[in-house]
Amino acid sequence: MSVSPEILKKRYGFKFPFKPDPLVRKSLHYINGGKRLLDIGCGEGPDSVFFAKKGFQVTAFDANGSYLKRFRKFCTHHNLRGITIQCRDAIKYRYPRNYYDVINCLLVICCMKRSEFDRMLKPLKQSVKPGGIIIISARNYLDPDLNGYRSSQKMIEPNTFRHKEDCCKFAYFIEKGLLRKVFSDFEILYYFEGYVPCKYKEHPKHGDSNIICRRKY
Image 1 (cartoon, one colour):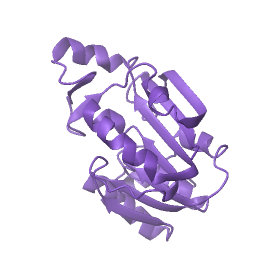
Image 2: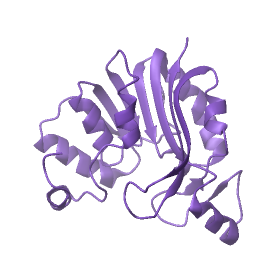
Image 3: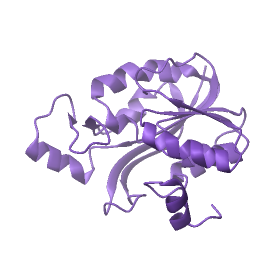
Image 4: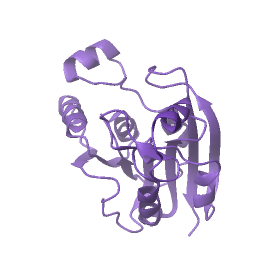
């Protein structure tokens, strides 16, 4: 962005740094066609804006109305016409079949129960076109917060707890190898499980699982 983070925060009230996720930047190396993109859990919109400026027609949704209000204000001021913004729930969203060329879903799985992820997975996979790309990141079994939850809360589902804060209802830490397993029917283009710096600089590090994969058929 050409505008400083301080000005962006003051002008639009952004809670987080307004810059695309590193996984989003990496994904451009693997996207080789199509411009219809779904950004699930878009938050305040930095990834959506990044894709829109690359020529994608973006449908962006999030369940947090405050985030979307800031996002819409930014789009209006910058005359961004390639983005449709909706207030929707990732689990209840009616994913159209064989519709999107790219689906971006970053740090959304970690804000739901394991059973909700299982329920959402099939329609999400079917919503991308054959040859299309899915990009997903999730907090995983390595995350330092997991031990804190285990010591202070009862697990309500596998690796799932009531969230300690008000940003979402649940905290789910995806199991080792699970993201690779559930996309075994896709062509896996990039996969990572390990520690990453906190992109919001609120914690020293996080445990993440990342995948970029292509639907085969």
